Image (cartoon, rainbow, N blue to C red; front, side, top):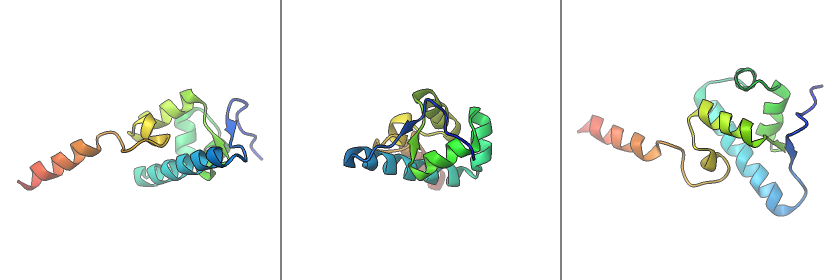
Length: 103
């Protein structure tokens, strides 16, 4: 069994912490699925174990800030959105690109 990185943060039992952990996990999982990448490929790109990525996707642990930044770059989303913000990077640009393509 892979052990999580020593610097990953376990999601505590506090309701707010669990909410943040679930939100992060849901957004990360959705974004990885949409990217077509596997957990193994994400892990290799970040230099972490596949077990680390699996724990992040399950909401059991949260990545270090540096790993979160690299995740956002790899998956082309804003780090703030990944951590619970309002929209992915480029969302408004993508909408305007679709509108321009239709016109």
